[in-house]
Length: 182
Image: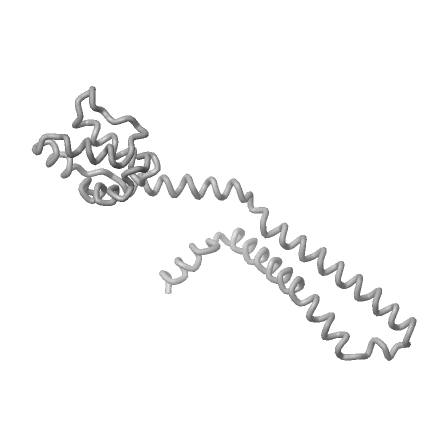
């Protein structure tokens, strides 16, 4: 990518350190190649300092600098890769199993409480007490969410295990590859 396009993107970041600007470290390195040793920019230079350093260059050096290519895409790609690795390490693939375990305990709790209430109802009012349709509607509505989430969780696990053994990709990549292969 041409340095002039990168500089246009840097203008709104005049008070931001170069290390926080996409491609900032590469930009500082490119500008430092044209600056004398006494005026070299530090790694933590701000966007405004970079722009003023470029403006202080003679016109021939500035033109040469502006035509210089910087491989910003490779830098951005490595930044995204590092960010994704950090997120994957932080998650540890533990969120879905925790939700599954919570839903299993909730389902067991609700079913146990409901069975105790049914036994109490039979004891107090006979077998007719448990034949009321509204009673079973309440039970179904209380247990539908945890049962549905558990079913989805185990269905996804089964699909992921199948994909791992067969070698098919999972997630967004599988959707993309499925669209391409059609």
